[in-house]
Image (tube, rainbow over the protein chains, first blue to last red):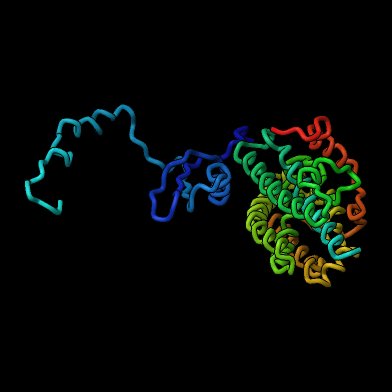
Length: 96
Length: 252
């Protein structure tokens, strides 16, 4: 018999109001979807935060590796033309 | 007994049930099997203390002796409490707590559904708010009873034992006396005979899903309508009331 009594890990995302983005709140333990929703509700919406909850098994999340941080994120830093502020607004243009 | 006196007693019972079960559940704080369950059980306790606050405040107004909800909660002795014996039973293991919660939540689901139609506006309003909370308590308790009943040999054994041990306290939920009959006639109280078959059918279905046996109806414990309790209530009150008894009117 397994001695791990902590059940599986799930990530919790909550929406503060209808139409808003779901924001990561943290993680919880649960043995299935139903329990995950209940535990997420009890852990992260005790004071009326939120209108909707997503729970996702932590093992299903694909994360980038810290070692790849240079490869993934550095190249964008020296290409300032990727920023909207690079472009000067033509004088007289109204609807930009 | 006037209608006002009957309504006071009736409201007090409902408030006491919520208060005592809240106190019991709060004992799980920092002791539950895991953190999420710890939060769930203390959430339930907070729901119930809110409900008891509303009910005891209303009871105090009905009584007309200027007793606040806090005075009713902290200055009455054991024999002046009218909660069902079921809610004062010790937490036991997790299975006992969940079976107790299932019994009471199924009862409260049907009870507060009916109570929303009460001719007493205050009770009807409290019922509408309470029902949302009760539905969640029930979903949680029901899931766990099925999970444990249909789980390992050990969890099944403990859950069936909890059912067998607590069954004798289930009959009292449906007891009625002159307070009830007077208020039923006024359209205020609920006829518990109508709820009993619904309760039993719901419980039987949960047990069926959890591979659990419904016990034979044998001797049923009774007494709370007269303020007679099991040996556990006095100990619970001595802990709950300690501060107000030792330092009356203490504020924080």
